[in-house]
Length: 169
Image (tube, rainbow, N blue to C red; front, side):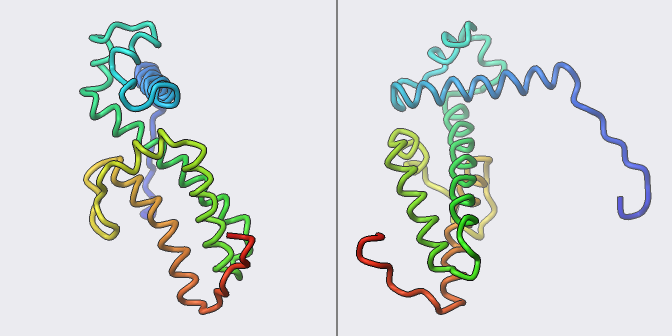
């Protein structure tokens, strides 16, 4: 650390790694259900069935259906943010207007390709940017909003955005 003291970190225990792997599998199976069945098809019972668990066993990992949906929504936000950042970063930073268009187009393409994920994620009310997030889901949503806010700020401060070509919108 900055004081020169020895800081030791211990690797996660086998039990912690297994728990993390099970949590990841739960969210993966829930997302698979979402993509095939929609939000109504995502139930703790259905996830447990896909994993070969009893519903009661699933409650060792997830306290409620709402917690499952919130965690899955946070994962979706993180994946979306990665896509948006890749689109933004593929454009020269000296072209803030083009970067904003790239982020916007990537968001639209994502939403059209994943209508059920879009519905789940954007049907949830979020804490506004600038306020402390009250949950993992709100923090993920704020991070996604920050990608757009940063792109807009870059355009505003550069004063260089020209209207897009008619065919490129």
